[in-house]
Structure formats: C-alpha cells, structure tokens
Image (cartoon, rainbow, N blue to C red; front, side, top):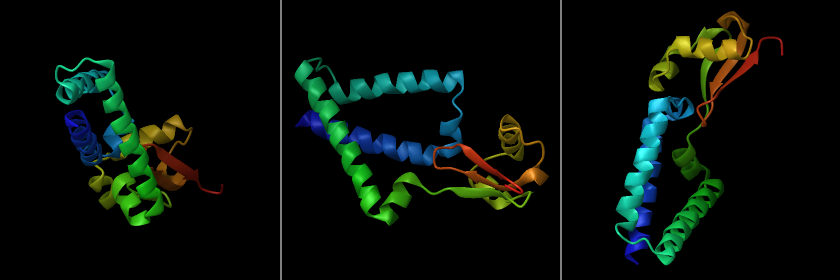
Length: 147
C-alpha cells in the first residue's frame, strides 16, 4: 500500500509541476531540459520505490500511475471544467496580424519566438497571420489570411 500512496503523490506532484511550468517551456526542450527530465525521473523513481527493486513493486507502481492517468483523463473528458483545469485551453496570441501582448505576457512568450515559429511554417510577417493560437501542447498554430 505504501508504494501506491507514494506513486499517487508523485503523479499529482508531476501533474501540478507541468501545469505550473507552462506550455511554452514544455514544447521547446533544450538539451539541458532533457537531461534535467532524466534526472528528475530518476529522483522520482528513487522516491517512489525507495529500495524496493522487486518486479512486484515495479508492477504496483506502474499500475497505479496507469490507473491514475486513465482516471484523470476520463474525469477531464466527462467534466469540461475539470478538463480545462487539467489541460488548459488554447490561447489566441495574434489576431488579424496584431500580437495580443496581454496573452503573450501571460504565457511568458516573446514575440520573437512567435515570429520564429511563423518562419518555420513559411510565414514571413505578422501581417500574413489571421490567427496564431498557442495550443495546450505548447505548439503554435497559424491561420494565414485568406485561407
């Protein structure tokens, strides 16, 4: 039972951290961020399993995380308000070629990053953009004018 409780606490802690960190940071992992994730994963494993290296302990922890993930996912799907808290909602960051600075500031997103993403999708200037939407995944979706 101890493993189940530790796995559940870890699961909700990681869920909270990913919501606090924000979608922009999660969408653009630098090499240091990747290494940090690996280190965090190892630390979490040590905290959850402590010195239990048994196959049974592993199965209990994995099953607990799988059940929690499935339950949280279904809860968010069935109850839209809970889903918004868990997943967030897309945010418009450019409308009719004009950046929405309030939304950019709220997401700690620089206009230069938006322009870089636009260039990645062969969009040269803000004037070419009807809508730019920061998705819950951290990806920016662009809708060109006249599309």
